[in-house]
Each structure stands twice: as C-alpha cells, then as structure tokens.
Image (cartoon, rainbow, N blue to C red; front, side):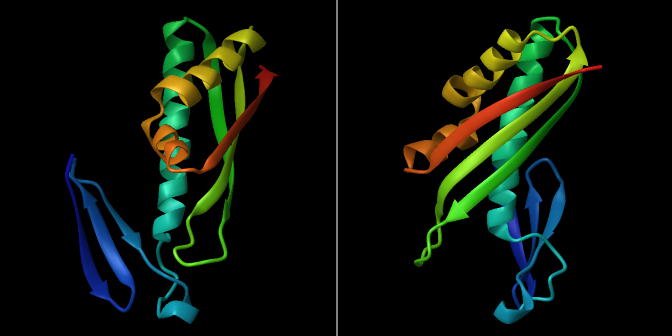
Length: 139
C-alpha cells in the first residue's frame, strides 16, 4: 500500500492513495488552517468505522442475510497531552434488513472487532480502548 501527502499551504495538505483517490486535510483556524478539509485524526476515526463496517457487511452478506443498510456511529476520546492520541473509541452499528437475526449481527460485529478489522485491532494493540454495540432495524 502506498500514499502521498502533499503540503498545499498553511496547514492544508492533499493526500492521495495508491488507488488514485484524493482528499483534502486541513486544520482549524486557531492552528493556521481554513477549516476546508478533514482533520487527520478524523480521517483515522473514519478509517476505523469504514474498516469495521466493511467487515460487518461482508460477513452478513456471505451468510446470505438480507442487509439493506449499515451505519456506524463513532465516538472517540483523546488524551489531553501531546501527542493527543485516542484513548477510547466506541462504534455503534445500526444494521437494517429483512429478517435479520440479532445473533448474526452480533457475530459479525464480534468477528470484525476480534479478527478482521485491521484498523481497530491495530489501535487496540496500541492501547486504545475500543468498544462496540449494535441495534437491528427490521425493514
């Protein structure tokens, strides 16, 4: 995997993934930014949510469950010292579908957390407390 991050000006950067996708990162005005892009730590949090959501959907679809939606709501806490790393991340999944079994969703969330999600497992090994819960919505 490769990526590049190019400084634009101030504290704005453009990151480009090896697959050719780009995103703007910027800081808040009190840190010299113009608030026109995501913060790098927000991107890291989104990466955890995206990685976990990908797993949950893949596991449920492989089990032939009729999933119609999946939203991961993430909340995170950071320490008050520099570096201001994450201390806690909580993922709340809202999974919707037809005839979804609670046990199947629970299994998918657990497998993502314990076996498949590289992002959350890596952060957990670095000392971040990562918790998960879910709800199922019948459609």
